Amino acid sequence: MALGEPIEGFLLQLRQGHIFEVKGLIHPPGHVVAYPKYVLDPSGDRERGGVRYRKLGSLREKVAFIKEHVPHYLVHDPVLDEVLCEPPRSDVARILDPVGGLGELRRSGPSSTLALASLELVDEVLDRANLRWSDVGISGSILAGLEGPSSDIDLVFYGHDACLEAYEALRSMREEGATKPLGLEELKAIFSSRSRDTKHDRASFFTRERNKVLQGTFRGFPYSIRLVPSRGPEPYGATRFRKLGVGVIKAIIVDASRSIFTPCIYRLGNVRLVEGPAEPSYLTSFRMRFCEHAWEGELIKARGKLEEVLRPDGGAEVRLLVGSLPGDYFMPLAT
Image (cartoon, rainbow, N blue to C red; front, side, top):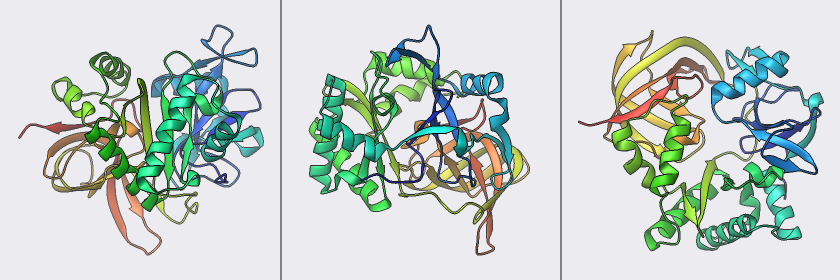
């Protein structure tokens, strides 16, 4: 059963042929917040139906592509108070739904060992968590039909309770050895890739990344799993955001219960503002690299965009959004 309106995990194939990935849960009427992932390139290393594509990696690379090829997609969003890439729905040729894509993969049967491993991983998690196939979808290169030698298993679970059940299943699988942590060479490649736009503490990176159960290997294939607590978009304009500037903070994590979700959320205490106009009460990110990233009681240092969150009930608080700007970071510190 397909989900419907595009949210985090969906892909969009534009009329020009490029494939964009949908980001977040808030989208303006007639547009979708989405960024290029696979772009047409005659020398690209991915191929589908005789057409070649190139996968874009860093945020800088994606923004550079937008500015060169579709600069009119960059607009200031008045609700999110940021310049974002928002292709119009009229430019979308196909909406690739992760849940529908997984259903199609089950019906047609896997055409590769990667696709087979993806189905086996889903089946194992669903069995342990007592979930339905409609709670999970497949994204990334398999959904796009653009598998390559470096492709991994890319799954998305939807719905708050389903996500919690899936996480517990994944944790038990790791404890029993059904999944394994990423290996040293895989972690080196991730460190190199992420360091293009995110500063990391090398000393703790490899240990911390190995402990994350939302990423690892299954049947020899790397996997990454997003847990999206919503099954649909949030009402556009109900919550509004006001940009305050760039902030650098040191703080203690006081609540990491939502650190497994996309977006991940960490409640903060003992905040010390190193740079910026206002102290945030929580840190959030839509980038999976910051999920399972810090624990309650840990001291962290982070850089991101400070925003005032204006809720429908009239309440307001300040958050630090990490990962929307090149140079953002979120690092646990030794105490």
